[in-house]
Length: 120
Length: 134
Image (cartoon, rainbow over all chains, first blue to last red; front, side, top):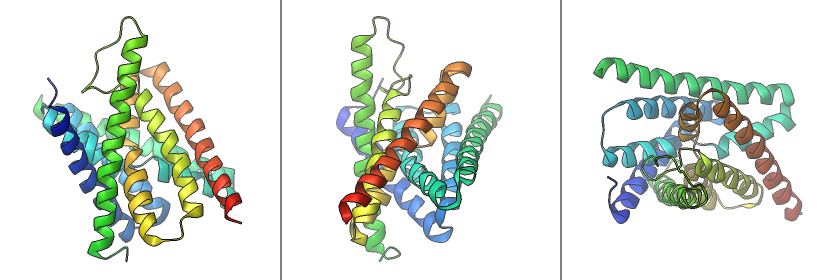
């Protein structure tokens, strides 16, 4: 059912390395809170697509858990939102928090429906 | 330095460690949940269908990132530990996926609890780091 522990670790780690480097590349081009929103929406779309695709544990560990998991981030989002609250007010922070959730949720569902329809 | 191949290497090495750490937390918590609950739902790739592992990783990582960003002076440490490890240890895509999998009432609670504890952890991390610096 699942891959051997060492193989699973290598797959998740490799995907994580690529996901983090890709997120860094997006951050250098876009920058700031907008880049966090962008990676979270794109990564959630990709994870939605992967979870609807008939792929085995290898692809799920490498791309889903590793790449999509590391490409998207909660910690940068949380720290950015807390900083937004102290710099520009609670209302601006609430908008950041709600926008991330709405965009990522919509992207995830869109990804899974798109792949589900295409393959089903 | 952050635009150099070396900067990308630091982020990638951190990303490797962060993703592996998150997976290990997920598997460890799945084992605890399976041991404590009598029924125990089917584990999705060894992960927790309850999203508990993701929640723990997200809250712990948010605290640690708040601490790091207020204390780390070196750009190298920020790239390796911050952009690389901690940002990869935490995840938004799996968080959303878990919320969807939990369904309507439970998923909304999961989002609310994740947001509340995650923001609180980040705020405490920033406050603790900012205080000890001076």
